[in-house]
Structure formats: C-alpha cells, structure tokens
Length: 342
Image (tube, rainbow, N blue to C red):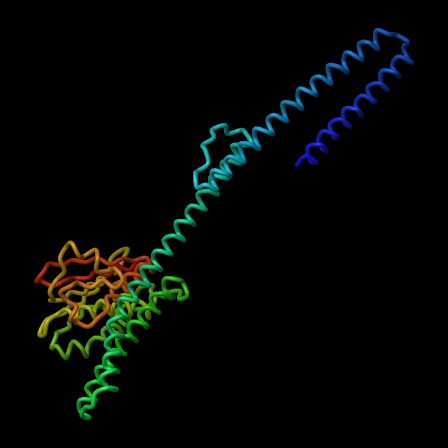
C-alpha cells in the first residue's frame, strides 16, 4: 500500500517537474525573442497561477477519491455484515451509480440466501416427514421378522405373517415411488410436455386406476365429459393428478356411495369437478390437506400416506392451473381442477 502511495506521489512530482521545465523553456524562449523582462514576469506569474490551480484541483480530486473509496469500503463492509446499502439520491454521482448496482447485488444475494434457507428448511422438514412415515412399516417389519425367527408356528400362521410383511413392503415401496415423483417434479428433473389433446382420454386413464377399488366398495362412478374438449396439457402427469384426487374420493367414500366427475369448457379454463359422498372436510382443514404427508386424525386407519393431494396440486400448478375445494362435513367434497386453455 505504501509503495502504491509513493508511486503516485512520485508521478505527481515528475509531472510537476516536467511542466516546470516546459514553462521555463517557454519563458526563456520568449525572453530571448523579445528581450522584455515584463513578459518574463507575467509568464512566471501565469505559471504560478496554473501550478496553484493544478495543486488545488489535484488535492480536491484526491480528497474526493479518498471519500469515495472510504464510502465504498463501508458499504461493502455493511453488506458483508448483512445490512442493506444506504440510499443515495445524488443521481449524477459515480458513487450513486455504484451504490445502485451494489443495492441490486445485495437484493439478489438476499433472495439467494432466503432461497437457500427455505430449501434447507424444506429439506429438513422432508427428512423429518420421511423418517416419520417409514418408522411404522420398518418397526412392523422388524417385529414380523423377529417373530418368524424366534417363535415356532404353523405354516398357516407363517403365511399370515409373510402377507403382513408384504403389505408393509408395499407401503414402503409406494412411499418411495411417491417421493421420487415429487422430488423429480420439484427439482425440475421432469419437465411437463403440454400438448393440445382431448381431456376425455386423460380422464379415462385416471379413472381406469380407481374403478376396481370403487367396484369393491360398490361405489357408483358417473362421468360427464364431452369428447370434443381439447386442452394443452401433459397427459401422463395430469392423469396422475386426477387419479390421486379420484383415489382419495374412493378411499373416503363409504360403501354404496357415489362419485361424480364432470368436465366443463370455459373461456379461459377447463374445469374438472370430482364430487364424492364421503365424510367431508372441515373448513379449517381445507387449506391443510394439500400439505405433504398431511392426514386427518380421524382417517389414520385408512390406507394412505398423505402425499396424493400434494402431488396433484404440484402437477396442476406447474401447468398454470389451480385446485379449489368445496366441502361440508357429512355431505362429501368437491375438488375442482382448473387447467388454463392457453
């Protein structure tokens, strides 16, 4: 740092010396040509004034640079400490221009920091949720395995334990598959391929996955979907979203119940209503059912892990749509899926 200061000072001194030599040479030349001492004195006075003005200008400029560098260093130090840069309103100053860009940089860094913090919190929540979800089936598998190894039993009894073990393995596999789908969507590994195609075929694919379970419970499923309604959407993932909603409707609708599906074409959206005659959802819980792994306490005896609606909303949202819930406790629920036409 000191070497830098000495170099600047020496440069200034060299410049002053050069100008001084030029001035003396000029004055000497003028004197030799005119032999008039008054002109020489006037030249010397002019040179002194020029040197004085130059010295004042250099001192002023040096002072401004020192203040500028000090202010810039303070701003950067404040940013490193997490404080926002001060607001500068001198729009013509260099410091304002740099401060404006530092402010934008600070805002970008803050957003990145908030995004990282949110991702960490989401990851921690996800790990906690997964840990909670796998705890029960793993504990059941350990118990079954210990029983099979340590206790003598008949072949019939052993088959029952093996079936129970298979059920827990199926639950773990379902959980892992659901988590893989969710993570691939959230991280952008999968990009939705929206093509203009009939909604009828997409809905038919979703209905095909729930008809067997609906038949087992003697649930009547009615569908009203005009075949000429077309929409730009990803068939595979939209079918997955609709299946998750329909699957929930089957799970929470009692035997001999009804599920109605209707599709309407609006000016900006295509609306898909899925209405069931199940237990309904309390108003204060309707905003929570789309959370990952959320399940109401009253339905813990029904098969499921609470990720279907979360995944459905992610898929619909990524296509520019949204899901609306209308429900009354004891009178069933209606899930309305809105997908944009554009």
